[in-house]
Length: 113
Length: 113
Image (cartoon, rainbow over the protein chains, first blue to last red):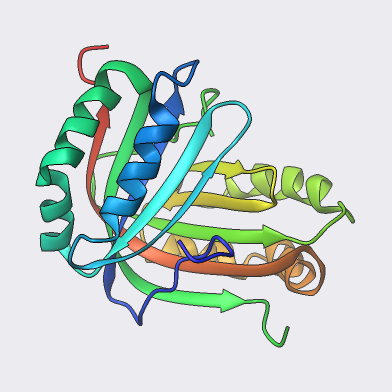
């Protein structure tokens, strides 16, 4: 993530993993693991950037951008990340939705500011 | 948006508009307009649902799901929404990134909970 929270992505097409999640209550190691995973995820070939927000009610949306589908598959299978996914399913998330999408067009704004 | 914050979407393929934004400070009519737009947007043919989170630092991610690209174009051109977009560019957003993406695969979890 760049310092302002926006991902710097190339011209489309590229891929986005949209991860919407509701956290369980309590930390139980979540923040520490997220720090490790956020750092590790940037080393995945094809990783382009991420944008991530969590509200006070525990609902969060993270969008992670990748060059292509092979990069997404590589990150999913990465050993430490696979272990984190298991703990996430068991402990950290009440519910999540994950969508893999191909970005076709992109704009930024406001124009002229 | 369903009451738990997750959008109920059909089997892919469908479309996602990923809108990441940093708000300017102060309300200046933003919350009231968002209420109007959130209601109006559900009337757009092809609208499937939305997920939206804003953090305490003003960074927000909204993902709005549509049946197809024509539905997105229809909503972009809707008169009241076009007016809201203008005010947004002038007043409400320090910066935003909008990405239009085709959702190809989707999963939910945790399994078995």
